[in-house]
Image (cartoon, rainbow, N blue to C red):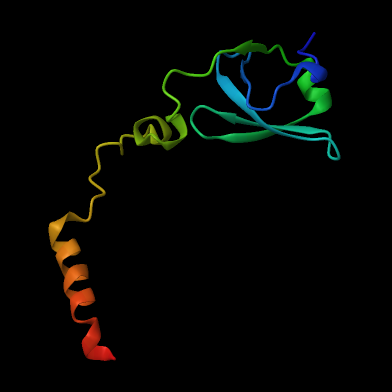
Length: 105
């Protein structure tokens, strides 16, 4: 038997049968659905009937709550070491553009 709907807490963390933890982020009574977000940022909607069949249990929130924003966790495809910074040259060109903006007025 699944976790009772009346006991669901928005903002509460739960763990499913597969061991993945997720947060309940919304409950839509008109559509009879629960919106959850996994630690990696994936969002899923579960209807009330399906929820009642799931084996979930309350759990504490992760110690590192940046999971959805952490490239290492969210990409997981070998791209986590890519340097996405603009570098100083790109910043200098923006600075030059802003300094010369008065020429165009």
